[in-house]
Length: 185
Image (tube, rainbow, N blue to C red; front, side, top):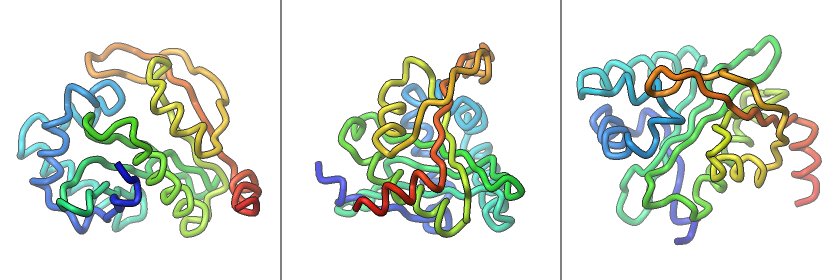
């Protein structure tokens, strides 16, 4: 599968129904890493409420959500979001998932490159971080492939799907590291 056959579209290009279907179809696969989103999308009504909140947060520049679209079929197959934005420190977190059937094909890595550029160039961030479960090797590889460095493991930092406290590995990418990588290309 060619990663260039996929694009990112903004939240304003997707309906709440499409969002609900994406979460619902993938809930078993994503519930560990996107526990809060899955919990808040148990019904169509709940998903519509969360989608509305994300739309408002985007208008207020507190959160940005992008969906991965398969160009040929027009199907929405994943999402990337920019969240936990702290404009005073100029840092933010990114999160991402893709439908299981599309995982391991380089699509998220390619889309993450675009989100990194957006964060540094459009939002003027100094640092981007991401969190991954220790067993989520695929997510860690996306970060490492895009220049993130592991900064540490925080114990019981995340409340998982079954309200169990989970460890997370933090990865960070600084703007000067990004600029150095861009100058190599």
